[in-house]
Length: 193
Image 1 (tube, helix red, strand yellow):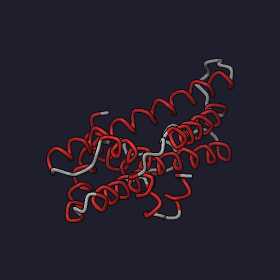
Image 2: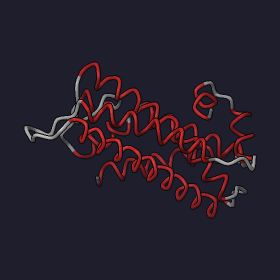
Image 3: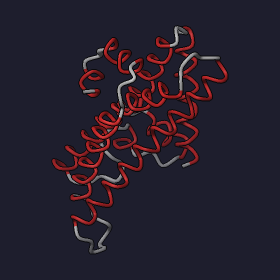
Image 4: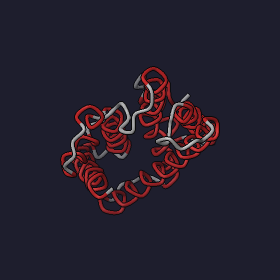
């Protein structure tokens, strides 16, 4: 399982997955199902400010949103590292980039599972439970974007995938550049969004 390899830092197994011709569909569906289940659980506890909506319907909508977010996340990671591939002349195939996106989604799915558990225990929170923004609640846009970025699962994804790409392509000196550019992009998207 890809999640176990990431959690326990089995980098050699992850590199074997990247280099293999093995189908990545099982890993894709494993992550998609975990996102859907976590999203459904969160949706069951979500309320829409006095709008009467069946909790199962809300769970289904949140589950679909979680899976769509997962797909967009894999696509965004693929595009980002495809651009890095062109700029830094990385020797990595598009299939390997796609698999890197799957591996990079593991911290995100773990964050979604954590948020689902917290939602079950403490109820729905619009700001979530994982970022500094959830606890600080900054109103100023630049500060709120920074606080949203300070999410251990987001930071783990950025650092872990940047490390894997740098090590996989034998360009370890680019690791801080990958992390820095990705952090600036995440901050910019958080500021705009």
